[in-house]
Length: 142
Ligand code: MN
Image (cartoon, rainbow, N blue to C red):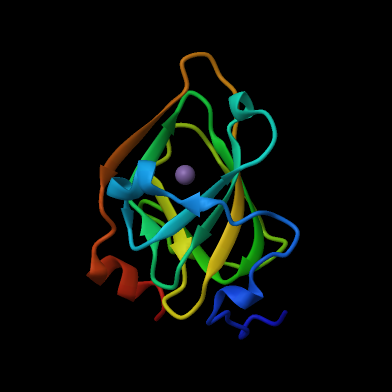
């Protein structure tokens, strides 16, 4: 896929990984609708996350253990606080260090899927800080 390609329906999402269920357990820390499919042993903390267009999670921090994102479909964004947002496409891999405030999600006009792996660590946890405002989100596309 080229950088300009977008996915406007679920038809373009991965056929190789499950979509899973609507991500109701984390919905309060997401803006928009997302879907979650656990992959492998639940204790490994590995899942396929699907974001509808415009959906993103809150600013958050992975304490102690970080997180790895492996992008598999669509177009999305990753941003660390104080840095420009990074546009994401299938094949991109993002290594998120522990204690770094960030968010990730879909582009406004595209579905987006990434596999998320939690890096195991003693006492690892996630802290959900605050929503990405509409103004912050709109600014990444410019
Ligand atoms: Mn994260």
